[in-house]
Image (cartoon, rainbow, N blue to C red; front, side):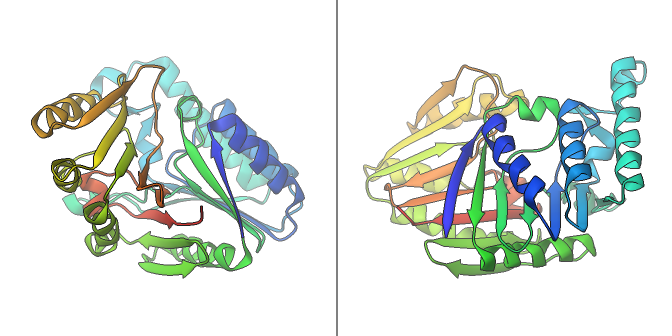
Amino acid sequence: MNIKLLVDFAEFWQSLELDIATASQRVLVQTFSFEGDSVGALLADALEASPARDRRVLVDSFSKIVLNDRFLYRPANFFDSQLRREAIATRQLCARLDAAGIQVKYGNPFSFIPRRCLARNHKKLIVVDNRVAYIGGMNFSEHNASWHDLMLRIDDTDIAQFFRDDFDSAWRGERLRRTRQFAGIELSTLDGFSNKATFARVIELLVAARQTIFVESPYVTFPFYEPLRAAHERGVQVIIITPKDNNWSHFADYARWEARRGGLNLRLRESGMSHLKAMLIDDRYLIAGSSNFDILIYRVYQEILSVMSEP
């Protein structure tokens, strides 16, 4: 097994573009956001040029109503011509892919049931043939690509199959909760119903920490602050990095409040938005994937979580 940590979009895209170009069987892309801008066009161009027979893109329905972090149907946005043009461009890009034989599906449709409305499929996943899988936090839109972020490229046939099965189940509209242990990495897919049970592993590692906990995430809320405060109180060095200019500003304010009341070492990253989400515990365990560390992820989102112990 070979795991590479790809930091920021340029490094990620350089790797992915080559994998797509050399694929022979399939390229499966699952993303939370897909927009008809230059980054969406990059992916479309690469997929059109790929010799792979099975080329599919699965997008959460969130991307139908939110572009550039703006709600399309908010009254103030009705007269935003740039936003409207991008919505049209996104539909045209999907039609172009469909005409090229590349299937695009908007999954996880919205519902009038509040929980179903909140329960988004937040996974970011790419599977290339039966050999490579990418997981992490990056979407395919210009504003997301400009953020500091992380993707993992995993070169392993068994892991590629694990994620291919998960992609196919999501394509069919199913929700799977699975955890499998591979050499040096434990992988979990969260179904949005039993996330608490899967996150018990993360809480367990935080409770067992003895030296250091390093957290980088734009969105940290309860119940994760409780074990972080407890770790600090027993002498563990806890450092949290979150962006000062958060795309959802209330998260930065909430982090300041939690840090003050818990005595936590909070660092505000000043160089733009960071969407990277990871925990490093005692320099032994790296937790990363599509999942943030907030209450929605803990309760209702569909996610990918990895716990790595390979040095």
